[in-house]
Length: 355
Ligand SMILES: Cc1cc2nc3c(=O)[nH]c(=O)nc-3n(C[C@H](O)[C@H](O)[C@H](O)COP(=O)(O)O)c2cc1C
Image (cartoon, rainbow, N blue to C red; front, side):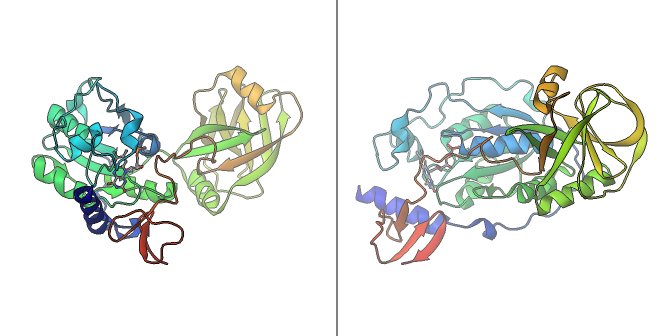
């Protein structure tokens, strides 16, 4: 136990870093390759960020699933008899746990975002199995992690020294990173990203992909300051339309709409199309993966007016970042668990707090 506490304390002392300590990345220019977002996630924290990165980059999402799943007993990371502990500390554990699913055509990817939790200060060993298996020689690989408090520095050291033929970029711990911050970071590697917008009607949120023009740029800039809520009514049996309360630049062109199209009309009205119409107006984007019937039901087509809320960040409730470690868990500098009454410097959620 002593041995473990020492390691835990050393780990926390050497690895703790807040996100603000992450060094800025040099912009990498525009996208020059196909993106893969590969991740291992035990309790879905890392998964949430992997999904966001895949959404922003339009990259393929691949979950690294161990052939033998880790049981819940591994959540107790004080227990030295767990499989995770033995693997990470190389005390009789498998150093390259096998992966279940094969990644098809791995050589097609030029940029790989590689995500995982931090386990005992380092990448889970299954990440190394993944790198052994697919190589990625000469490809760009960008690690990202989530953790209770430990920073990413050991991951940034271990992976490049073990796989020197990969073009490694400095990885980042993503806990608490805002969508806007994440997007800027992701863009520094891939250039432009896909912009999503969330539309909520009657408590049900749908996702849309925005096109890139000066109208959406201005709309997104406004949404970064806060959500926009407006009232929409039916018009012409083909759209639900309402005044946004703001005027945005127009990029008008002759368009014949299809269900799901989002159109800016005269710079200040947003139309959610559920049927066909031809006019000279500005394309904003399109609802993702919704049939005409689904759009009509959701938008209350032909029914009463609806309140529509536009948001640039995913409303809470759609996706929740879970943690297998209670938020209140804190450690002293000696690596022992701190209680509410502990009077000392403690480390909690990656921050040093003097009590
Ligand atoms: C076996 C194990 C070891 C862990 N070791 C650490 C650690 O050294 N430092 C830390 O800050 N968090 C540690 N954690 C907490 C996880 O890194 C954290 O909860 C992470 O966000 C989980 O990501 P996931 O949900 O994608 O699995 C550990 C968790 C487990 C299960």
